[in-house]
Length: 326
Image (cartoon, rainbow, N blue to C red; front, side):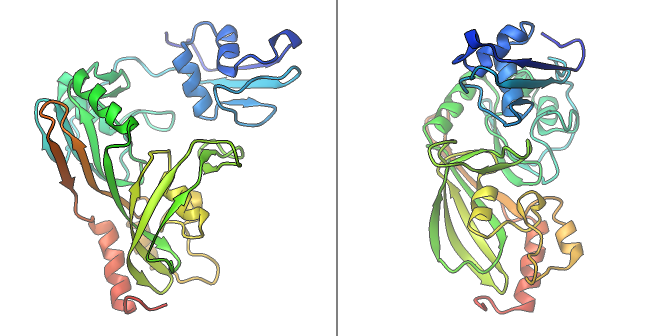
């Protein structure tokens, strides 16, 4: 159901409501919204409990103050937009696109047009109705500032197969990135649960012990420069902003990532401003993708070359410093 207008809801949890799940409590207060819509609001940071950002499953306590911001819902029907796509693989079941940095995967509160989903709908109208109405065919997403390979399903059967593979963690995803600081380890792993940052609805953060969702990123050093490290990362899980948060948590935020501290650190080595602004996002590229084809059962292994926006910076670093220089 579409909301008539944006509105705010605020109420105090009564003694008889203590112990009730937040999403179910909100369903009673907002009967015109589906439970999935309410979950989306909570996950987007639009619901606060005593000022904190909770999970949909949070158990309420008597006397807590719940505040919810309910923006107008986007129309159920998405308008196709004839935006050119870099198609890497396509058949009757699957579409794999090389997304440029700066393009949003699907409509959201910040952007309703110019999305990959709208472009894919124009390219392959048959994906309408596959998956969610505002995310036709979208199996997973890439951040706006990240470039690279992304899978879309062209049939419901393919969608269910591919999302199941993601759930089983059998889809292989390889990323290339440039981080601040000279990472000493040749390879390693960050195993740290992630949760939404209670101080900001647009950020994720390493969660407190015993909370959040498990997230595991493996990394391998490709090239080391004075003040920078070129890395390959592989996802064992697929959490929002996972690589960005994990690398920042060990002191190596990605170049261009203002959200997680990707500016040159004080006293650190700076890059020419035109190279950083030319990134058009974050120095992160989804370079490799492997999955089992939902119809044939064969492994599909795809690759995307490093885009110029990142390779220009590497060329600059190689010219300015010898690789391996500390």
